[in-house]
Length: 347
Image 1: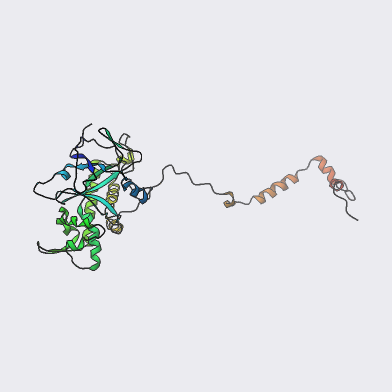
Image 2: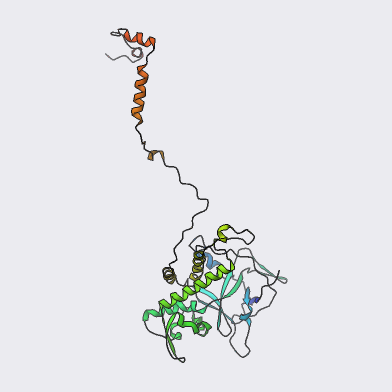
């Protein structure tokens, strides 16, 4: 098995929170995680309580296992800034999430946590009780700036980036001002001023156009690499015909869902209408057939009573020889056989 390129396994220590103390080790790919669902509809996903329980660190944990890109560990000796883990407001959930700033706050990485119960790490001759795995992936800082720009739009005025990116709950958000993504703010906002002083204002049309471009590029990459977008599937299984014949709309719908994981819900709805992506409701496989109608709901379509009366009259029309003789006998004054078994009348 070959190690992952440009990835370093680091053991992060709590007693140095402002910088990374990394122990470089040969790393190997973690086990494959199940892919996302193609419809991107709400299903039986983990609840907020489950996510919070996974993100909460163990009380006694003082170090973590993390896969970090090599570029995040490159330290410039002429720069005093260091690689830092910070908690910022997530653009979709509006809750705190962990991010990594590197290279003088120019690059931003999202920190994803994979956690399972009853799991630990064996490091040399010690046991790491916290068995969670932290993985960093680069993220466009414009996604993190988008909610602040949208909120500042309520005033309807042009503002500087320092005035827009201000959050008392997450003061580390000021690091976003120095990220490399700020050079492309003209793609999601109106810009005025000179190079020395620029002011910005949220532009809805530009945002939707920028997100559409992101979605289309993502769909093209998924199609180019032949990513299965028809549901969870193991790499050891033979691909089904449905997975091999995924249409362009399937890839667009899947890419749209991935982009929506990093934008507010109202912006996601606007993007759906802008791109005219229909909502698809998945049908359950092996769905049982419809129940039979109740007998009480069934009404006869023909009148069988008339047919029954006709058959009775037809039977009475044919008499045997004994019945013919009995019909000729005078029965006046004779009692029927049933009268002998009936109770006597009270006098």
